[in-house]
Image (cartoon, rainbow, N blue to C red; front, side):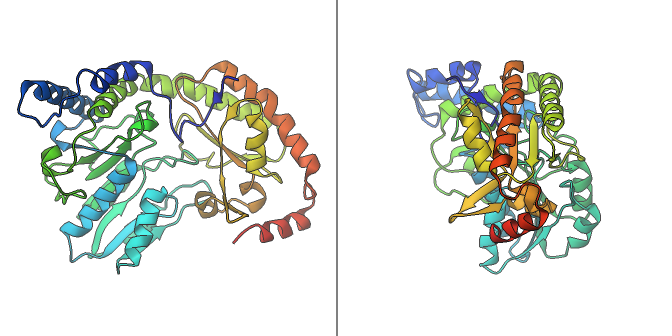
Length: 398
């Protein structure tokens, strides 16, 4: 069965043009770009072109681009560098809805004596900018705020956030893994110090990412060893994947209009159709600005995992807003931070589309998902029983 793949915020297919660009570097062009001989030097030229392509896509200088292994490494490198370059500053500001690449690192740093302020969000997933401003201190080393949320698609107002943070002389990092290729990003105008992206979120292969470091920003390497990446990230370059990422960013930049027209229209049609066909459903973050491809929808009194299993029978690939931990169901930290009621949070599903999504894909979900929800509600002893549902939620949460 051909999959109806609507889980693109988890990972994307490698674009055919991207695959074609990288294949020569897995076969005949296998030289080390750091070598002195012309065979390796030719590969180094392709690496420089990939760097230039990424820089053009982000409107920055190629010297500000560091290739990494993934978004997680880029996030870690930025935050750790800010702390190491400012040892007198021991305070970090972030949000409660960040990706684990940032949240888990901050939790780890707390065990090392750093203080972390985690900003809350409202019921639509939006930040309170006044709370952000009040959280900044003389010893704040860095503010880390994602560009767009991976679960709900809610977009944070980075220009306004940057204005507040930079006016106080604090370093600013943004995890833009979900935003690149979906939102226009112009780093010549957006004054962030660090920006992280990941190749496999924009139709490049897994195992390659980028950390943007603005010129003049103090930087301490996360990986120490050889001279690669101008001494900022040691390790022989993953040339094939870097070339692929350069081509993927180029394609994403060219087709960003399609993301914000055709893909957005498909997302909106899916959203409207499900809200109309399924009673007691709601959009998580529906009142905020969102990525054009992302729909987080919650269905009352059903379990997200059960929905996913039944959709899988039709080849429909999506993801749940909940995570199963040690045998007990706990809603995601993002939905908890937004205050989504447990009766909805447990039944949250994320659909994330791409430029490869077809109208037929949307049609299949609209045909098969409403009967699945109806069937699960018939099996649920809590459907329509508020008191029993509340008791259910209290036993299924930590």
